[in-house]
Length: 381
Image (cartoon, rainbow, N blue to C red):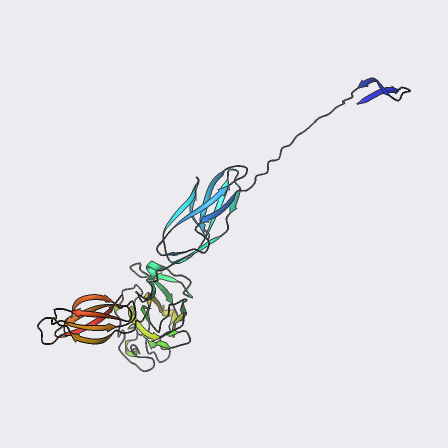
């Protein structure tokens, strides 16, 4: 723009002429669109939540996009895609979750293809544990149902010929069960099925096929040899400890050649042992097995229970109307089945009682006409 003019004596500017020179001008405008990624967070379940198997869990996520819309939300357990949801509310229901630890994430995608991943939410699903006051069960696992959690040092699982899963198979290996936060107790019962797979050669003098069960650094529950019949002349130590026993192959086996690992066998084993600590460590191991013959072992139907204190009879007396009564002493909450017999060859259940305050009174108002009558109280779950 150019202006011409003159200044009067009074100092005022007078514009005499004005013209604008635009010249040549060309304008360009470029608009750059930057897509903001969506945001997503798992709102349910809460991080660290615990559930009881078989668990029903609903995953829920909150997802939004500041400059577009959400096209989908995917839910993952680790790297495994569980499902995709395209409409709000973003929820997915999982059924019959086995006992295990799970890590969930949600991935949201917007209409421009940008994605975001939520923070990890970790939960645990545990097997039911009944209160010891009314049920002595601490831990149970039939591995085809409950799965394997991190209480085992090796969670490998296999299947029998009828597709029943079991823990194993293992070779000359050790597998350790660790249970924590046990209720107060004085004695425990360990019960399980031992699967012996393929060639177990028992008391082989060159390499005895030994199986061990011990409690941490404490008592040894089992140190013995087994023979699946592959070297029948060598025998086996079980049911005695090794060395010391020499019994025929398969002595004590409850099943043979039913697992699909011939020759194979199943032994049902149960041990009661003193234990007071809040943590239980059980170590299972085998040694001396011939790997070229495919020998191995596994576990199934394992339980750990609190050994209830025994029931004891207290005072007894005849009642005024010809009946008979006696006290049963035992731990609080223990349940018992009171039974009677006149010959000790068969027993008849009379009633079920629960011990409160250390004892319970039983009254048999019509004991019958037999000259001799016996009574017993049997602990029940």
